[in-house]
Amino acid sequence: MIYALLETPLSDKTIDVPVTSKIAKIPSQILSFQLFEEGKTIPEIAKECGLVTEMIYGHLAKFAE
Image 1 (spheres, one colour):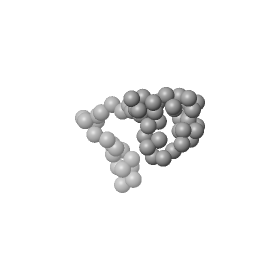
Image 2: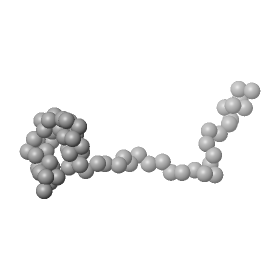
Image 3: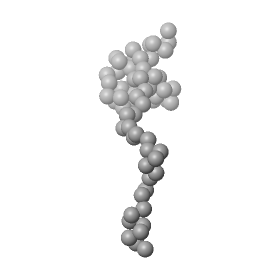
Image 4: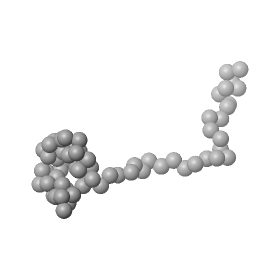
C-alpha cells in the first residue's frame, strides 16, 4: 500500500504549466504614494524603500501636478 502511494504522481503532466519566479514590481513612485496615503511619514517611506527623502519628495510631487 505505501509503495503504491509513493508511485502516485502529484501532478497531471498533460496540463503542465510553466512556473515562473517573476514578481510583479510596483513602480517606486506609486509605492511611495500608497505608503504616504497609508499615513507613513516621508522618512519612514524612504527607509522602507531604501531611498533618500529627496527622492520620496520627488515621487510625491509628481502626484501633486
